[in-house]
Length: 263
Image (cartoon, rainbow, N blue to C red):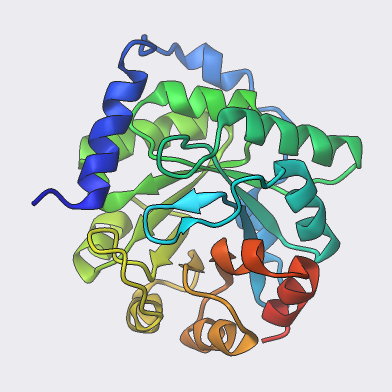
């Protein structure tokens, strides 16, 4: 049986197929001088545990979380809680997001004079998506190591570098971590959710983060609902956590962010 991640990646390749075109270096380079705040710097400069707060309406594992969620209103809660970064899901079919959400949130932040960096959370397969992320004001892109070949990872990283965007390499196993580390990453995220079965286990971070060199920013992703959950990631050596469902379901996301940060 095809696992869910393979299904999603196959759909994404079909979804963007008709829009794919060669992306010239200068198209990306025009964004490299933007004054956007880097995600890696925001997380590296943290004294407390950093929080990357996610705008997320639904997922294959949780189903409908908040179908009527307003991206900018959710972002307002997150900046009130002083989240170091925002993750904006732009996949429509599986997560109910859109590139419009990213545009809206970055415009919202700009209007309020905030420099909070935004991650485009999607299933990246082509430099076109990197260009779209830069155009929409993102500061970083997600690279799912398991889902991409080494050549694809290098191509997408090169595109991100040209555009002045950070690349977050997401891993779940030791083998994937080895693959990521061979590419000289600056940010590595350990996904506590197994993307084949969508089972969550924070012990993934506890096992893998200690193996990551100290000069690499580390993020523990998924499975955070309480300060105790966040404390486990912090004790494992995580610089930050990425939280979606726990914050979207919370009655007071800003307070929960503060609870995470003080873990």
